[in-house]
Length: 89
Image (tube, rainbow, N blue to C red):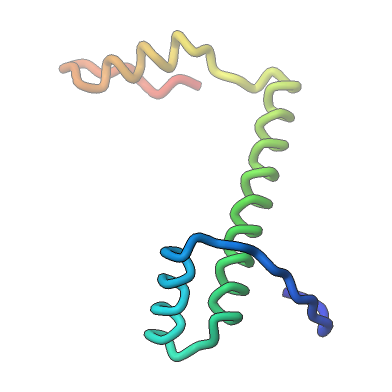
């Protein structure tokens, strides 16, 4: 994460989750805070990537760069056959 400042965030989590965090911190010889920062950073990165991919997909829809559902279904159904269809484009 960028920036040198910090801010304390408080969250109530189920005991089972807190115990897992504590076990992981002990196993990795890291602090609970370090584990929480790693987890939060990974989750935020994942959500930002999901948002980027959604925007990209919506641009494809707007530009009519889509594949007909029936063509995809026919291709998927053919995969187990002796003569699979080519990948729809």
